[in-house]
Image (tube, rainbow, N blue to C red):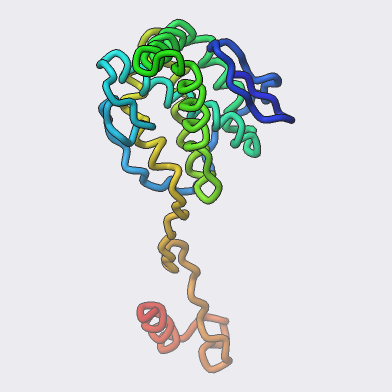
Length: 230
């Protein structure tokens, strides 16, 4: 899938293609002080949450379907998440295409074969429509921050995953990626005024200090009691 910063993206019949301009390298970071809980969990490739329905698919075709949705989600993230360059969404996506090229190419061939097998002469067009709708289903506005953070984390993990092992990663993380499309807010931070304690000042009236500028006992007791009630 080729990404163009000016014109968006267009579907091509081959897996080859990378983002035209990579973002500068930067340290990893997150967009939330306390990341929302997107309920991660393993998912079966035939689960409706994975993506559009592909009735009559074989187990191998369902596996390709899951991988194609994972790649599509990271593709959309490379487009939508460039506002936060430290996520490295563009360069990481390019790296995934190169690192997992063989596995992704196999998924493309298998999934394309499904549409040709099931829909005959209309198969290629049906696959194109499926791919376009799959990209659109990963588009989010209100949930952009959560989606970008989760997609960035998955992309970094994908780069560290050995070749040929992208599918298990997708099975483990795709549910979380789907859930991140929903808008969630920063978890509230509980305010604790005693987290940083400020010393209590003693009374400054002349009646509390003797001739040697020592605090009188009666005022010291009052100060301690006052501090204890706060």
